[in-house]
Length: 219
Image (cartoon, rainbow, N blue to C red):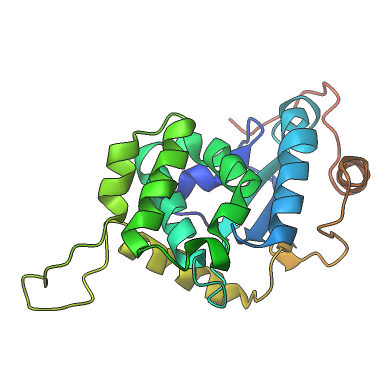
């Protein structure tokens, strides 16, 4: 599935050429413990290896999957959208930090604060990885005044971006997290319990390593 340029930060590419590459799409929710387990395993054990072992062979896309039964899910994914808008190159570091501290945004840890207070904590988290905290909060804050047309569901600076993400994800029919698509097809063999070694075995089986051979192109 295509990736809109404004969401380019969701893709982790190993010197990817637009020709004949494999694509892993990870549908993850920031407040899903199983999503955190998968993402943190990938970032510590697999992503550092991709440029060396699979250059021009594989790209990975983090699809932000909002789970509405987690009330804070929308808020944390809005923060991800704000980081994408401001500093796409910081999206993966921010996502790693948020997954590491996801428990701070579970139900019982947000129920006694306002929506904007949760946004402030998320903005501070973004600031920890080098994104401008004030700009992040500026995109997330919900005002208390009606819109120019009198509307009360005014949204925030990333509402339209989140709508696009949700629309794209609905086209796949993905429901639970984590769900992995390999070249557009659900890959049920991949589990959130995969260790780094299991990921390496799966990649070696499904992605041919580039062993210094010259790739000819039609110029």
